[in-house]
Length: 430
Image (cartoon, rainbow, N blue to C red; front, side, top):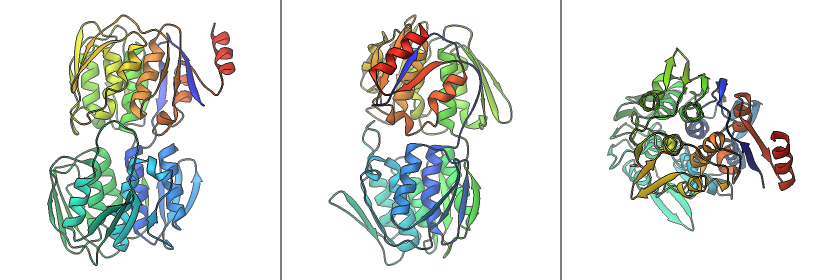
């Protein structure tokens, strides 16, 4: 089983380039099947989730041409069926975007219930509510979501809770519905805007993305497009926090600083110096972090996908911090792993009380999910001694070349398969 072995203690320094946003890419790839013409997508991250989605699309007849590692041409003119069910797709949360895409184009979709990281209850009731409002009938039988409609008709939809997935899925289906759809209490995340921009580049008529009211006038047909995916806000934030935790100095390139403002604000409170340019952010952290309080909120608030990373950094701060998780109820599952490294964190309901310690110590730990796995890597980079991290397949779902990029910043990290390789690494580092 592949794992990371890490020797901590090196401040990160240098430059790192951020790839395309995974959360945007998954929805954009699904949306690409809504036209019979060829779509060219650039800045696509080469990660497990995007590759699984492309495989699933090929299984129903979509022609996928990998132009290079980060570019793909997609032609969905000859889709042979509307049922997507395989073991891989069941493990990926964003597979539900194929429902909205297929329903919008063909008025019929059958997709296996999605899985993904077990970070809390993520029901699809708001997705179903939206599809029903557009005139579709949705049933779940034998772990398959079946959605169909004679025709889709625009509707006024108020989401009971802010949901990125539901906002995007309704937007996909409504793009090819008859008449106008209004989504109120819509999610405002950058990847919602990116998906809307992509659909508009194919001829959709979507206005208001990035606000809490999105208006969509349905069109009968979408056309081909060339599109570049936005940079990954969460990958960028992860490297920002890694710089802070290791007391490093890192320039994070190919970013949109506006998307990172809530993360930058917290790092400034923790004593970091942040320099912004048009497409880069520099994080300087020359001292032990200061304690602060963090609460996750929908965008533009502090992102839930950055909560484990910031908690790891606050675990090394001078003083007591409180981290409140308001999005997912099981997002503190990594705390017991961090405790093995000497962290002093007590979870009470949706809050973690973080008493900062001077340093972490190396241990054998396991990644419980994608973002927590990345956070544990950050902890290992700061720790005394050696750390091994299992279940890195979670991390590779959303971080391309994570270990390679960290090594280029001075981290002592390797991906290994066997205990013998671990011992060789330890001897080499010793």
